[in-house]
Length: 219
Picture (cartoon, rainbow, N blue to C red):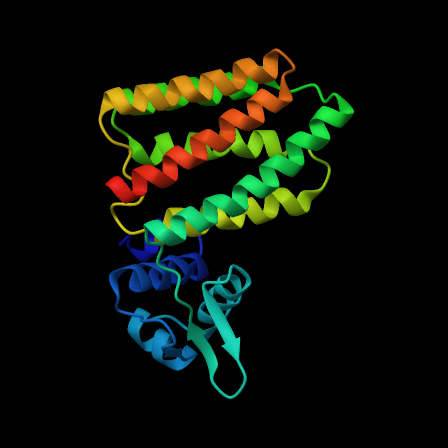
C-alpha cells in the first residue's frame, strides 16, 4: 500500500486502504465498521474516515443498515459474478447503440482507434493495468455518444467494481498472442462503426463480452 504522502488527500488514502483490506480479506462481508476503529488502525482523524465511508457507500462497497451502522458488502467478484456484471454492461451498451442507430450518430472513430493503439502498446509492454484501462475507455467512449448520463455512470460503477474486487484469475488476459486476438476484435468493432453498421458493431461487442466471461472461467 502507498504511504500517506503518495495520496492527494487523506480521505483518498483511507478510501483505498479500506478497499485493500476488503480485497485481502481483512474486512469480511457483513462485518461492522466504526469510524473509531478505522481512525485507530489507519492513524488518521475521523473526518477523512467519514468522507471515505460516504464515497464507498455511494459506490455500493459499504452499506448503511438500520441498527447496524456501516457494514462491508460482499463485493469480491468470482467468474460467475463477473459474467453477471458483463451482462449488465451489455444491456447499457445495447441501449446506447440502438439510439445511435436511430439518430445516425457520428461515431468518434479516431478516439476508438487511439484506445486500440494504447491497448496494443500496453500489451507489448505487459502493462496489464493500462491494457484493461484502455479497454474500458473504449466502451466509455461509445457510451458518451448517448445523452443519458445514467448509462455511463452505471457502467463506470460496474467497471470500478470489476477492477478493484475481481479475484486474481478473473481479469487475466492470457498470452500476448491471445491479447493480439482481442485487440483485433476491438478493431473489428471500430471498423463496423466506421462503416455505419451499428448492428454489426453491437453484435461484435456482445461476442467480445461473452469471450471475456468464458475466459474468466478458463483462467
